[in-house]
Length: 73
Image (cartoon, rainbow, N blue to C red; front, side, top):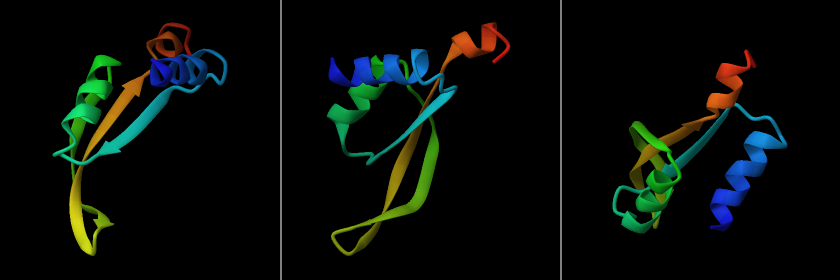
């Protein structure tokens, strides 16, 4: 719920057009949360972050503010 409110604030009050998130492919709860908030998986970032001494792949998600599209923003 809190993340959804932050997304609303970023789009409506801060007028952002796009929000991105990176998530580890095994982090199923975070993936479910992003997808429930209309984030779309755009691809896999290979060796994107170093976790526990090992380079890890990450999924890249994005959410586009369609209101800016409609309003020519």
